[in-house]
Length: 384
Ligand code: MG
Image (cartoon, rainbow, N blue to C red; front, side, top):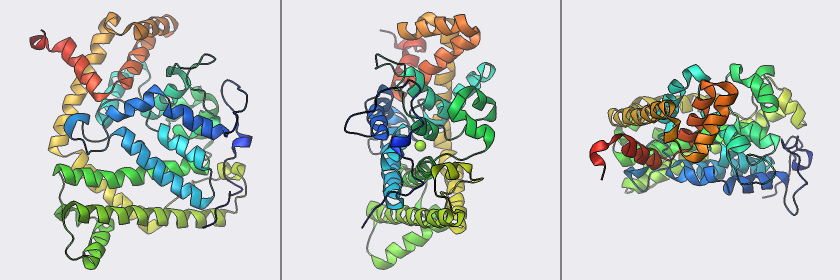
């Protein structure tokens, strides 16, 4: 198979640049350098111990944010290559898209957002950008990891209009209603393909959802039937995984073909023309889009709001809320590094500044770090 670079792909030689100008890298492209910096970051290593749906210690085979990010990168990269898009940029965005995620998945993010309501709120997309722009501290010449505009644009996949104005270059598209690069659009949908499929597998593994229930999801049922027809004796995990492998393949092929058709119909020839479009060009067919929505609804109703998951969510929210309240009351409970941040930000913007430093600290925690910290501060009976 022959691959070529499409004229509308992002070009590392024409990047819109970094926040702090640097000399061009030797023997690798600007986007490769971004990808490499992400892999070497502290926030990336922490993804291993952060929840996707199931809390980190529940079982060794469940997805974590790290394995999820790797699956997103695999899907996004293979589509990028076949469509002639920039694979390095795609991979950089995929590997960094969840760097700002709190411990305990969406429960942690929702609770931290509630805690921060009076202080500007908390959004994990914004936090991912904050991690790479500000919070990582490994380089002598600049704060953060100083990524290119194109990777930062991809990280910020959603953003409330009220926050966009303060974000400078990467916030502009939310005000102007323009599109990001195709690499960013693609990674966004690859994220969805990855979690919709792996959440089915993890949900079945946990026993919280069943194969019988999944028969009401057409995109699953169709592949399941096809597998059973071809392999009538196949059972158990192997049957499930063969079904999911085909589902991912179906979604990827649909996405590739629908997007190619949309690009062709739009007539875009350059990245600037991609950005000027009124809608994203990376998309599913109408049929796949509605089937995917049925699947998402199924997962929401039957897995994410399952009573067992809900109890776990409720407990996770208590942990985040209690930690936030304790640090707000007494910043001396923070690590020295975050005490210094809290004092500095408080001097700049008052109580909101202190709250932001605390949100940064909590968002950076892994599940087990947060639980240990909660135990140390509140489980007085457990003190030895
Ligand atoms: Mg994700």
